[in-house]
Length: 208
View (cartoon, rainbow, N blue to C red):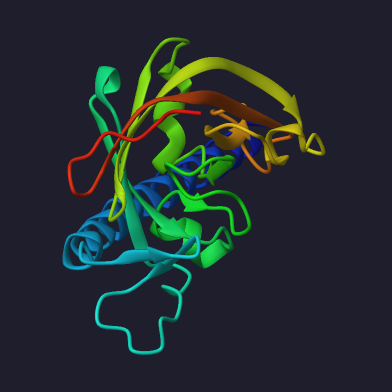
């Protein structure tokens, strides 16, 4: 019995150490990826939007910025949080940062802009977000301020937050619960409405 207790103690110790080092590795990789995304975003500030598409600077073919490329700076002032948003939401994209869901509106545009992120790295900050918080998004097209209108926890198959809208709204989506071992069963959704916008040339934009 004594030997069994010793064995179990060692197994728990090894298991805990593995979880700790895995969590530390993911955290450090996320920090490094965001630093790289920040550098990419700063170097691509000359990008423009054509027909609702993001176009890199100096692109003769007017092709889209590839998935995984940073194109927006998202900040939540009250939480002192700054994140760099990449295009695309597949596994590789989300390792770099929160990802803009392809097919949804771009930040500042009329329609539903959806940005997804991992609960255990970049979007962990959302656990502290509140109704009334401002979310500021900066792209090559301008600066846009959204105000949180509500937060909700929904089932993983609930797609209401992905549907098109007639006004400029933003949805931030991550898995829930935030502290959960394995695949989290629900989704945490932040809903926000655009309350102010200013084009890159400094002119104010109408808010629909």
